[in-house]
Length: 348
Ligand code: AMP
Ligand code: MG
Image (cartoon, rainbow, N blue to C red; front, side, top):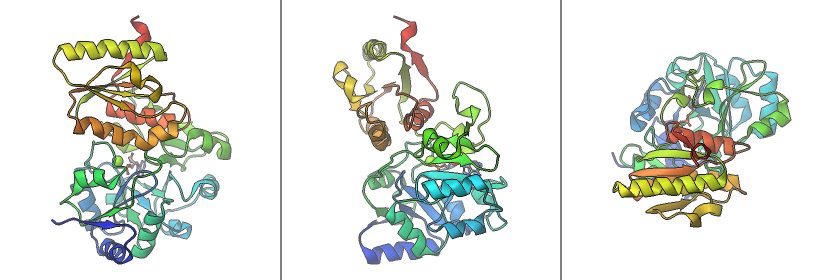
């Protein structure tokens, strides 16, 4: 298949892509979180092709994207009070809510669940595409399943060129990690996946918000967001996270670098800007300053993909504070490393 890559500012090409989406084709497009791979959510054959193009397991449901609040009504059985408050506060934006679904939503979207996840993206390109297509748009991240999500059109091209009809180039994504997934079907809403809207922001609006206990990687509980059970967001090389006090982390990583280099391995390090100069390794990726966690989030997946490009054999990563957007950053790093965490302070 030929993939046409279009400039998001080219009006005519844009209309072609919107028309293709309406006609059941696959179109990758930028959102403020990551690039999405879109199909008409009400067209089962089109949605099936999303799973095929990504190699996505069929038991992992998709988020439906809308551009106008009134479109929510036809997709869901009810809109709880809490959801109405959150729509007011955070839509359009990086918050996905899980509702009881309406009969209109096909099973292939929800992987057979009786709930549906819906989001209204803030990115003007995403909004315009959904409006012009005139259909609700199912869109998971536009990457091959398991790989780091795409935050530039180049990432999408690397993964999906030749597998989908259109890729809209709209520059790099601002948030850089996926939306927060929040179940609003219970009295107290539950965070199923941390993301662009932080727990603190949700608590400000709602007071109490719960977190799915399965998000604690070490536990063996089944996550309620099916997608959270897979190894995910992963660079090709094996990755380890090092936790502890900053000084101990640096010392431990330097010891690990030496050990791996001695074994002839090409070593990558993911570090904060504050510590970047303290390492000597084959590939050192400065993720940004710990004082600006939102900037670390913006570049996170590009950082992880850099290790693939440089073909390192093993990656050691610092850990970041789990507050605010840091929760989403650490959730993705834990998934990317399959939960392999080395505690630096234990072995001084
Ligand atoms: P992605 O679009 O690839 O970023 O993944 C979407 C995330 O939303 C995955 O973790 C899904 O499991 C989750 N999700 C989608 N629909 C539902 C639903 N009905 N209930 C719970 N989680 C969902
Ligand atoms: Mg994804």
